[in-house]
Every structure is written in C-alpha cells, then in structure tokens.
Length: 302
Ligand code: SF4
Image 1 (cartoon, rainbow, N blue to C red):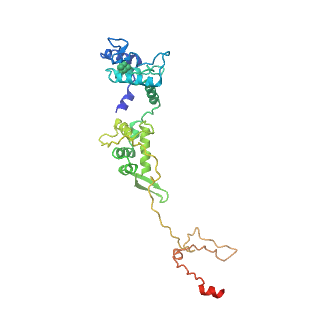
Image 2 (image 1 turned 90 degrees about the vertical axis):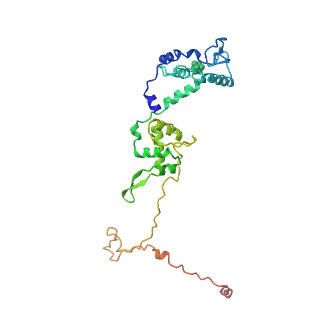
C-alpha cells in the first residue's frame, strides 16, 4: 500500500521541501544548531563542533577513521532531532538536473554516500507491474502458499491449483497438481513483477505483496529473514514419472500392420524373412548347464 501510494505522489520540489523544513516550529531546536552558550559547539552534542555534519575544509583533511567517527557522532545527533524527517526530505529532494539537493554531508541521519547509493538504487529499481498481472490463479495460489510455508516442495503442495498439461505421448490434455518447478517459476515471476531485486528475501516479497493488497485476509508466518524469495534450482524438482515395463512382443507376419507388412518381391517369390525378436520366454529359458572335465579325465589325458 505504501509503495503504491508513494509512487503515485508527485515529489516535492527542492524549494518546497526546504521551506517545509526551515519553517517547521521545531526547526530552531534541531540537533545541529549552534549551542546558545558556545556557537562553535553543536546544540545536540556540545562535544561536537558545529560543522561536524559536513566534511572539513580541504586544508584540514581527515583520515578514514576520523571521518567514520565524525559521521557516526553526527548521525547520533540526527536521530534525536525533531525535524529529522523534513530534513531528510529536503536533502534528498531532486534538483531539475537530477541531483540530490544536498549531495554531501550528513543530513536526516544518513551520510552523503548512503543517500547517493539510495538515489542510484531508486533509479535502477524496476517499476512494479499493474495489479492485473497478479490475478492469475497460479500466482495467487503460490503467493498464499508462500505466506504460510517456504520450502519449495511444501509451497508447491500447498498451492492447491490444478494445471492442464498436454501429454504428447498420450496425445491428450490431462489435469495435474502444481509441481515444484512451476511453483519456483511463479515465485521468480512475482519477484520480477513486484519490482524487487533477484536476491530479495521471502519477507521482502511478502511485504511488497501485502503493500499491494495481495495478501488481504491471509495469515503470514514470519521467518528469520534469511529465506530467499526464489529458492536455488533443484535437480529433483521434476515430478517422478512411473516407469513402464516394456516387454518384447512376438513378431509374426500376421501381427504386423498392413502398412509395414513386408512386400513380396516379384523377382524372388520367396518370402522376405522376418527378423525374430527374442521373447520373454527366451529370456526366461533355463540356462544350459556346462560340463567341465573332471580331475579324473584330466589325469587320464596327462
Ligand atoms: S536531521 Fe540532522 S542534519 Fe537535519 S536538522 Fe536535524 S540534526 Fe541537523
């Protein structure tokens, strides 16, 4: 619900976001404001310099460890700031050139690197598919099954949907239950349609589906967050097919179909010999007992 709503909202302009931030009644209580007693110190943490949210000047470079410590302390101040949400909205609003309003420094509890990465992720994020793409019975069934279980075989079994398959061997359409490969393919399709990355977890998939209203009235069993939305491929996913015992048939000329019955040659009136295929009786025939020369016979021969 949240993602669908926010995707329809028009983003605030930089000027509007900044106005909303600086004109908030609590703006003067922001954490990074100068301390009233010592303007060089920060109101939210007097141990910090008032400019700790921003990178030092070029002539006073800092090491990586110093930068991490400074940014960590600045983020701590932001987390207690009363206007953090509005500050974050302003700093991450997009300029007409497609850049962040504040590209550098800690704003709204996030470093410039984190906010830049978030912008790149948002640009590469796939737009979620329209709702009617989720309306197929298979996707609905797999999603509802995935809300309760996550083992690939259990999901396929819990997705109580009948499939119609064409059997080329039997030459007819037959009904069957969903197999694991189909269930996994539907899980992968759901991830793609919801605009999630391929490495999304089951929890992320269910959260996105719930946000689209696809799990209304469905009880969701939570996991520890490590279950992938799409399980790795398994070689045992194909349903086992029963083997058919093929026995050799006794081929006679009369048993052959007319189309395959051997023709008689005009030159040679004799019949074309029919190849005799071994029958089951031949296979089960008793094995002849071999007789080996006895010791007495060998002695006589010597
Ligand atoms: S969120 Fe952080 S950077 Fe923004 S006003 Fe508050 S303390 Fe300052």
